[in-house]
Length: 214
Image (cartoon, rainbow, N blue to C red; front, side, top):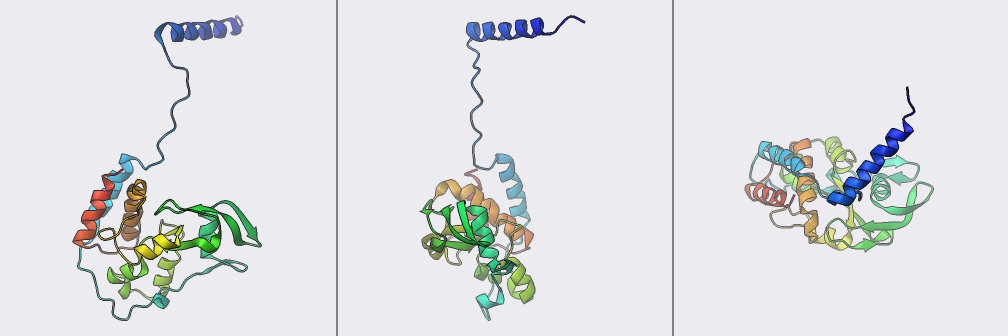
């Protein structure tokens, strides 16, 4: 069999000639967008359509203590530390405790340079969960919800945005960082679907509107 090197060189020369004559770009492809795809939005819309629509329930007997958190995840460490590690950059530790790093708040774009400035927010607030089905759960299940690291339920954000959000749903509060709306809606829907929580009519409408940002 004849050596392949001349063939390879010839093919390369042909490609270069083609590029020179017809303006074929040899530049690397543009970076993919960081927002989620339309396919994800379609999937989220299907999950949203499957959620039970119901009026907001009573806050009677509600207490954050009924959602025990934060659970331990190692020596002197807990779920809060785990979220700080996951969401931060250049994170530094003392043992397994997070003591330094930077975090970009998903809700308002603030860059936070200390873990003491970071709040760990529940995507679906505990009080909202109580009103949409969690009032009927056991405290153990509510603890599982409050410490859920497997789903997009916990997120590092600025204290100001967390306080602004409170226990509101997307019909009355949205991130000021509008570029986050697509992912915010998908994450909210994912949590409600996973935990079989209900949505109000206004909440469902707001979520559908936010998915249009995808």
